[in-house]
Length: 247
Image (cartoon, rainbow, N blue to C red; front, side, top):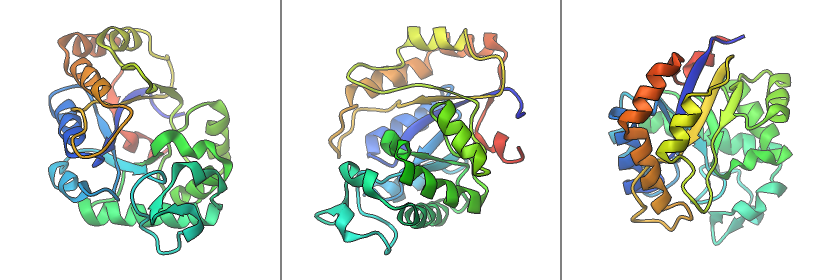
């Protein structure tokens, strides 16, 4: 059993310059402890330069931008770009190749390997995506975000480390308001590694996103003194996914 720990992971580093600025602020001046990086977006290179010294995993992106792997089939692209709507039809070997290619690009941009992998839009809910992702993660010895008990069990059966619990969502309203965050930090699970997924940032300036102004509400929450106090009071140590590398 891994030690008790809380990973506060901000998704979408590299998605947009304004989103990246907010994530980095939430890590350097707030309570966010980890982020995941979209390596195939126009602002990915600049994001990598800005994120030096931080815990960065791969935000596997099968929904936007161009594929990194040359093995990605044209039938799953729309005008040369990735399509979220077609992800359910991807074969495991295609996802494995793209995951490995995106991991290689992350390492080339950052100068170090990813800490772990999660998936933009949670597309590893599709069995083929989960299988391909698990193969790549096992090959690289990396943990993968699990969303629920079934996914946790499936990853474990494939020899892939994962979080014990998962908190977070995104929708029409900001998910992590200060009040909800403080409440969650006051009632964390009592065992294992908890991942709290979040989306802090400034509203995107270069891409269209359904989660836009909501990011600024989350950013204020993760920068707040109340959240910092609630985290300290919880007694649960903050970590990143490297806490799972030896378990």
